[in-house]
Figure 1 (cartoon, rainbow, N blue to C red):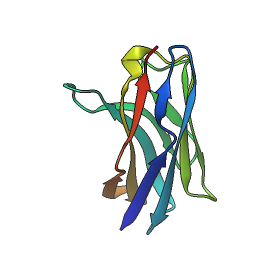
Figure 2 (figure 1 turned 90 degrees about the vertical axis):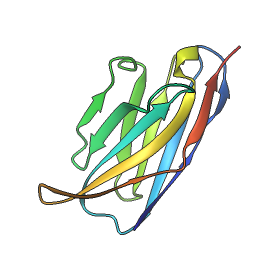
Figure 3 (figure 1 turned 30 degrees about the vertical axis):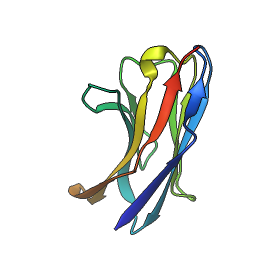
Length: 120
């Protein structure tokens, strides 16, 4: 089992910044992909950004150039630095991990979510 605990959400004005953190604990494999998803009211959950064990990152087009995902493997923590926030970034942000043994997917886990509200 893996537990994911997010923190760092809150209320911010348009153009502002927030940094989300997700601390993983439990049975963490050396090969995994950590990600941030978000879900706004009435919308489906969507992928925001991913980072694999080697540090390779991918981003949704809507956040490219504004958000940065990073990870600290020693702390089993993934971060999402969000700059130039827009009202449409308002959502519950979820941390997610896919774990692998070699190239074989084995299991995935979700965090409980943290609310980000962008409003003046």
